[in-house]
Image (cartoon, rainbow, N blue to C red; front, side, top):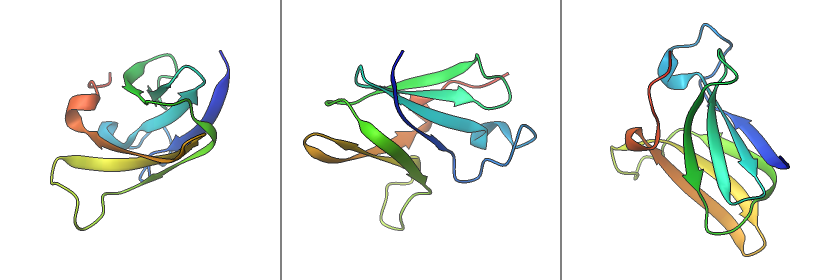
Length: 97
């Protein structure tokens, strides 16, 4: 019910974006980040658990050169314990409509 930040996939560019990039991420104060399809706002494409609650804005980036090939993109957020980096893989998401 209480949001802590939102970020769009780095390649998201509206509802006509290809399905794999058509995502927004919403952090909640219950230790989760939900992946939402931006073309179908009520369609949750996955939930990522964090060890601590996040606050403030989220940031998203494409994988870094040294990341594993399974990493699709990265999410960054702040917790009371410091920076949280989430490597998102295909296994973390479900296909959209």
